[in-house]
Image (tube, rainbow, N blue to C red; front, side, top):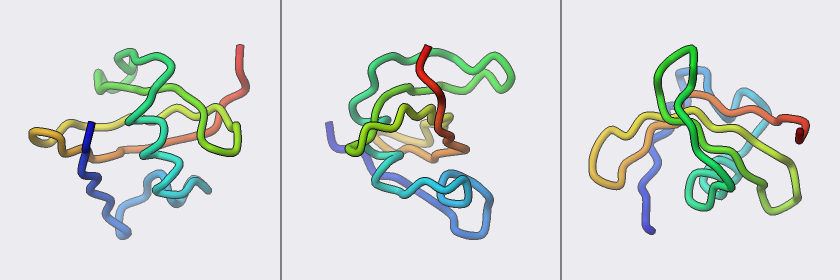
Length: 78
């Protein structure tokens, strides 16, 4: 799947959370599971990045194959 990512550097989000754009893309494009965020109602993807961290990414689908990451953060695996 080819997804375009829109990331606004002026809005706090995944990069300010210490994660790179690449980390976010890896998880959204290849999640181990997806759910709906209980707090926002937005999609949330869970998965590992290339160096093994387990990450959650909350995002909006703003068009066909266009994703706007709202926030992302590292989790401890359950």
